[in-house]
Image (tube, rainbow, N blue to C red):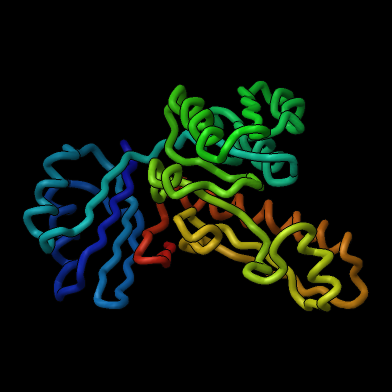
Length: 275
């Protein structure tokens, strides 16, 4: 028996669930679990399916029945391939490497690309390819061209920015729209720049946190996948806040990545629907 994920997004109208379920039944497929949501006049549906099916026949039947311009995606459940981009910080990258090593990540890490060689020893301990593409004396366009050339040698589904501390251009993002996942502390847009935790400590913040999101042309303002926060107080030093923040960042990134890898996310305008 094969397992599939069916995702449908379309404008809402009466009887959609009935129509979809009837088509699936007629193709002798079992629905293991399904979720749906209606908002802003849009209908979102995700189902886990089990059985042997003619994918083209099922897709054609859905296209003929559902509203015109409906987005219909059917994919067999499989491990996705990812490329990780990192700079110098090890906590998010190290966490993903360990999850990958212990088979706790539903993905294969194909390679790590960095603009420094700081993390090379760590990555090579896991017998994974490491590409150090230095950015010194290069324009952003020149550096990104080298990164794009490196990416071309791999077959992958998503790019994960594990504390990659370079701003990606609109041209780079356009190559992988909806395929780049980023993690950052949740202080943004406040406390921009160097040492945000020290800035936050000096301001007397009472919570710290992290946000994982898809990357678009608006820097750190892409569709949010998941977030988490942790209360802090005057008793915490900025170093303790930074350490706690790193733990939140790696946990949030791993959770967001699993949601993406399991095809649980719809991007709608600048928001996400997560099942």
